[in-house]
Image 1 (cartoon, rainbow, N blue to C red):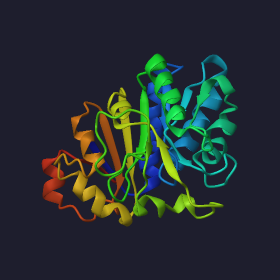
Image 2: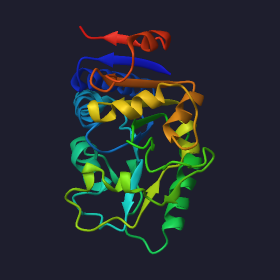
Image 3: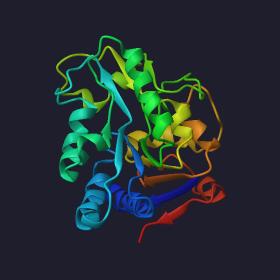
Length: 254
């Protein structure tokens, strides 16, 4: 895991956008698996600017929604669908055939997860996976105890996850989660993990202990060969400078 620490989330997001841009320039039709929430918003904004300036001569990326709140209407302002339309699909004018996402309202959630898993198997692996770090260590909606070999699945959500700020405007409580599995995440060619703010200091300290724990899904990222962990100084406030040096963290404060 490569760890880079920035003075603030804006500079970290610019770095993430640069990594994503480089991957897209190498492979225009790359499969981008996109997280939602506050953490990746600036990254997407910077990436969109590049794609819109260069996109006339290149293919648009293929976008895969990382997860979704099951049971909410698709147009609920709290859905991951609404977020992606606002921050990526709309700004990129992305055609429908370049986007795949879980349907939040479906009579058969397991079948819906299998549909996404089949697509990833046929079109993958994921080229770049953008992730945030859950306060309980979840990645996407892979909750503590998730099998690292599991593919897309229906997740029973913890109270910690149900307290996510995204759900503030939700019209109802999600019934479950629909999520890309740890197996597909760990098979991605590159992972960019964004960790910002003092509220993530405890989870990040646990992740950077470098212990792989089934009850802390993010710890499985240590098994991956190309993870970029981009954090701000607030997020590393619970980690000693000596330990960061031992991990080979790069401090990018200029």
